[in-house]
Amino acid sequence: MTQYELYPLLFEPVLKDYIWGGRNLEKLGRKLPAEGVIAESWEIAGHEDGTTRVANGRFAGKLLAELHQELGLDLIGSRSAWAQERGKFPLLIKLLDANRPLSVQVHPQDDYALENEGNELGKTEMWVVLQAKPGAEVILGVSHAISQDEFRVAIKSNQLEPHLHRIQVKAGDHICVPAGSLHAIMDGLLIAEIQQNSNTTYRVYDWGRVGADGRPRSLHVDKALDVINFEQIAPKICPPEPISDENGVRRSLLCQNEYFVTERVEMAAGSTFSGNCTGETMEIWGVMEGVVSVNDLVLTAVRFVLLPAAMGKFAIIAQSSATLLRSYVAA
Ligand code: ZN
Image (cartoon, rainbow, N blue to C red; front, side, top):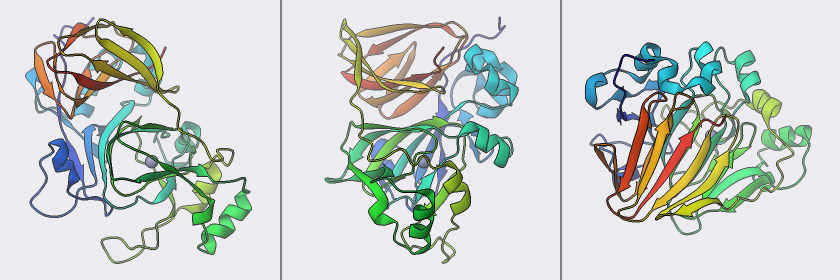
C-alpha cells in the first residue's frame, strides 16, 4: 500500500482555442483570456497534447502525468493495469463550447490507434448536454445504409450531408459515442465529455470552412473509412437506466463500455453518498448542478474531482440539491 495520504484531487484546466469555440465556457465558471474563442477546457487530462496540474493539497502544482508516474495503480486502479503497461492515464475529461459546428469525424478503435498512431489509445467517448439552444443537434451514425465506396464518393463530390444522421438534443441528454461512430457536435451546445485518453480525430467533412491560417483544415478520409462503423444506421439516443433510488440519492446509468461507466447521481439537499475506493478503480465525479462537499472539499458546479483508486472511504454530501456525473472503470 501507499505511504501517501491520498485525497480528492482538483485540477487547473487547460484551454484549447479550436476554431469552432466561443466564449460560453464563462457561463460554466471558466476564466477565459480577454480575447478570442475557446473551444475546449480539458478538466482532467494527462495527454501529451495537454496535461492538467493538481490544484490542491500536497500534490499541488504537479502535472497529472507526473503524479500518475509517481502513484501508478494507486491513482488509476488495478482494472486499468493494461493502460499502466502502456504508460497511459486511461480517461480524459473535457468541457466543450460548440459555438459553431465541429467537423464531421470519427475516432479509431484501440487496436487501430495502436497500429497506426503510435502509442495512442482509441477513443470511445460520451457527451452530456449541459446547455443547448432550441433545436440544437448532434450527428451520430449514417442516416441510411450506405457502402464504404458510396460514402467515399459522397465525400469527394461534396454531397455528404444527406447521409448524416441528425438528432435533436436538449440540456440533460446524454449520448454514448463508441469508437468508430461517425459524429459531429453541432452549434449551440455546451457539453461535458468523458472519453478515453486520446486526441486522434479523423475528419471527413468540415462544412467548407477554413482554419485560422485561412486554409481548409486537413481531412483524413482513408483512415476514417477504415474505422467508420457503417452499421450504425439512424441510431437513437438511449434514456438513462435507473440503478437505485434511496435516501435522497438517485443513480442512473448513462453509458457503459469496456473503458468507463458513467452514472448520473441526483442528490436531494442534505443527502449523502458514501463510497470506497478500494484500489480497483479511480472515480471521477463532476458536479453539473448545485453544491456538494467531497470529504472536506466544497465543490460548486461545474467542477470535476478525481478520487484516487487507493484513497479509501469517501463521502459526498449535497449542500443543495445537486446533479453529478460519476465515472469509473468497470470490473
Ligand atoms: Zn469526437
